[in-house]
Image 1 (cartoon, rainbow, N blue to C red):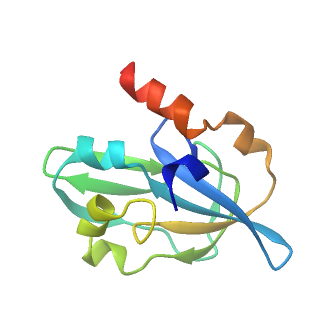
Image 2: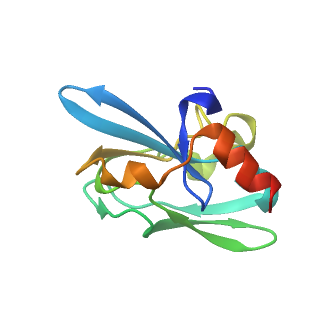
Length: 130
């Protein structure tokens, strides 16, 4: 996926929403900007499939040599898939954050939370402004 196709939260998570079998599914990850800011990643804690998530609520954490940061869901719904290979291959977040570096897939409960997300241009502007 290209960043231009994604929606971004102010907390640097991204979402790509697609129809799948009659449901709206959001693939979620963290932005290249966030990965660069965190630098050397050493640990990631991910939730279980079936866990309910709410927009702006923490679903896990990522730890770098600099700090531990919460991961926040940009959407409301139920986790239907977790990228279980990611914690053992954290370098993928740096090399392909918008592809192989996806973290979760969430079946949307509603599309309301999407209204609070930014397109790529607005997200880039937010990052530049600090």
